[in-house]
Structure formats: C-alpha cells, structure tokens
Image (cartoon, rainbow, N blue to C red):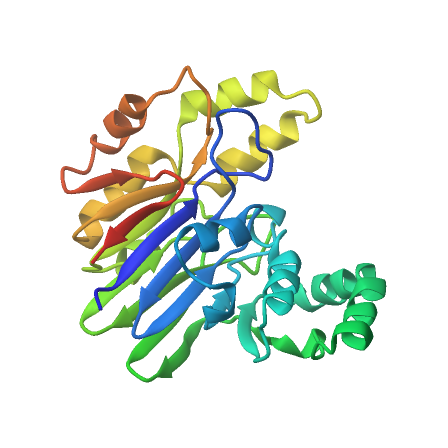
Length: 284
C-alpha cells in the first residue's frame, strides 16, 4: 500500500468561523500503521470521513499542548471506546498531557462508570498508553522510524517537529514553529515536508479585527510561527521533493486568497507545492 498523508485540519489556532478550515490534525498511513498526529477540534469526524474506523488508529502523536492540537483527544478516545476500542493506543506527547487526560476522565466519570456497569464496557482510562515525547528516535519497529526534534514555539518549550520514515519514503511535519535553521537538516531530502505558515499582511489584518486579545497576540504569532517566504526557503535548502502548507495563519480571510500564499512561497521555492485544505490526501 502506498504511503499517504491526509491533512484533516489545516487552520492555525483554535477558533473556527464560517468559511474557515478546522484546527490541526493529520492522518498518516505509513509502514503498515495508521497514525494520528494532533487532535484538534473535529478530528474524530475527520478520521471517519477518511473511511478509517476509529478503532484502527495505531499510534497518536501530540506535537505540543496548545488547544488546537489536543482539544478533542479525550472525545476521540471516548467515541472510539463506545465504538468498540478494547486495546491500548500509544499516545506520545509532551509531559503535561496526563493532567488533561485525567481531567477529561473526571469530567465524564458519571457516563464512563454508567457504561461500564450498564453496558459491560472495558476500562477507558487504560486505553490511552501515555508516553513522553522527547527529542531523538522515539519509535523504530516493524520498518517504521519516527524521530522528533524540538522546534521553536514560545512560550511553549516542549514543542516538536516529527520525521516519519518507512519503505524508503520520508515525511516531515514541522509542528508549530518559528523559522529555524535546524528544520533544513531535519527535513533533508524528505519526500514530503508539511510546514506551518503565516502570511505577514494577514497577521496584521487578523489582529486588527480581534475583539478579545491585545498586542500580546500579535507578538505571539510573529515570534512563534514561520512566514510563507521562509517556508519556501526551508524547502529549497532542504531539497525536499514536495512541500505542503498547513496551519495557516490567518485562515478563512476572504481578503487573502491562494495566490497570496503561493506568491509568498514562490519567492524561494519553485518545486511541487500543495496549499493544504481540510481532507486533502497526498500520496507518496
């Protein structure tokens, strides 16, 4: 079977509005595994829309603890559980996810206990096999290798890019990150680089319309994300075979069209380019 990457949610940030895409989640099918990376709002429906049964997810990676990357992890597990999940799924995430998981379980305790006693369900808590995400090779088994690199996403220190390799193919996911030279080496000669991107004029427009934030939001975006121009530079210098953009900042603004994104990336990149959209699948 060909390796593939499905961008189930490509919006940067947790808010959704009419016309926007959904927050971040990515489905990889590589090395005989079905892998979920990040679990933003809508991820459970997104998996099903790809014809994948929730109980068939083999591994889950959470790149960092911003809500648009793990808000729906608990509801995913609960929904998979009532759909028949009875085996543990490894969840590799930065330290701190356990507090969210136990908080979710606590918030749903009445329903969980009821379904165990009334329906004979197995224990839900044990189905998420939490493991701490750290730099280096974090999985190397059955022909699939996964490597993590700490990226730059202040104020969060535990934030990671991931590289997946199987059957001679390689996929690099930048995670949320500011520009960093280390991404060039990390993505060297990858078959596909999926990189977050911001459009600088769009950031200014986004912040001008914000009703419940202040100058700190603008400062955060500019210091924690990568301009589309710099994404093109990374792809060029890393000699990747295909570049795809995701985690768009802004997303859903009618004043900024695909041509604006493409023109910015094309300042430094003339290779194959995909502007991500929800549910788009890229086959390696």
